[in-house]
Length: 200
Image (cartoon, rainbow, N blue to C red):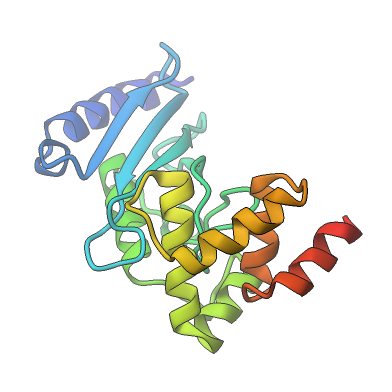
């Protein structure tokens, strides 16, 4: 990696460690390797959102051309959000694409992702199924996002009704993650979710 990128990452890494958000346990960053090309980020689910109480792990890959090109960031923790793929963790956020500026930092990225959790952009979705549910049935979206936060990010327990449906399908021998995805994408209808699971 170019020396300019390494020096910059070292400085930004320290900035995150010393930040007020880190001291309040809102954002966190760790090195994955010694040459600063890969980092692991973590953000707390924002208050008054379905993600509250959850901790979300992020994979951050630094390109050779940093800071002139954005880092490649994806969610490692599964999440139900219109702008984040529920399958791959890929993120649709302008500053990670064409709106990146060299003056931006890793702290900016982490805080922007935290803000994205609080203010989804369903008209520019990464996950069309989630975005559709967000627009068509906001209450179901909230319950589904809360359930995913509980199962994958350690947030407090959510809807017992949804948990019972998951248990019912798991008792039929289906794998838990597959059950959660099927029920989430089929509006929590056990019958159509079962058909989907059987067709895979």
